[in-house]
Length: 113
Length: 116
Image 1 (cartoon, rainbow over the protein chains, first blue to last red):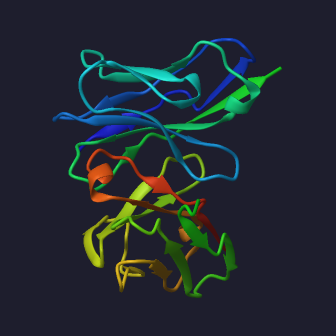
Image 2: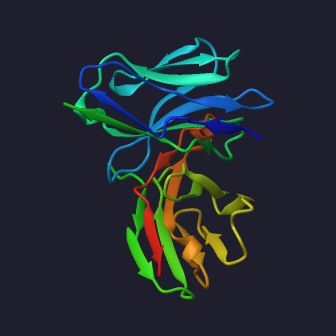
């Protein structure tokens, strides 16, 4: 079984500043990793995913994440945030097979002027 | 664009009552998932269907919970004899088998249950 840890429950940041949201995972087998975003009053939406290959993956809205196997991390980054990025961000993992995703507890990103 | 639709969006009920939530997936998706999300937590897997077959159930899904997808299209999640601990957001997601095998799910907006 895998687990996903998001240590930061809230991350406040000023507009146009860079941001990093941290995610660590544990699994005894290879995993696929994801970041989902939940805007207020909306459903979860896939931001980006790592399946294999290049460890740097790019997603929508200028976000990117880097898979680091040795550190079992999959941190999400954006070089310059916008007010509209205010949302809750969930890191998730699966070992494939199409059954279930294991989510972290989420990080609330609050972008301030 | 018809995404995943969930009804009702909000439900307030008294302890001991039964409630039912409905999920209409994206029409061409044969996989359907139910998750539960409580305050301060990420979504937790409850169960999933491939077409009408329920293929996996979490231990979180006690015998008071039942989910069905009778014709492989919409799904219902029923909670009998609700308890205050059942208060949560119930999320439905759908996917095609190909996308689901790589973890890409399409979520509805959720049905929020409050048990008084």
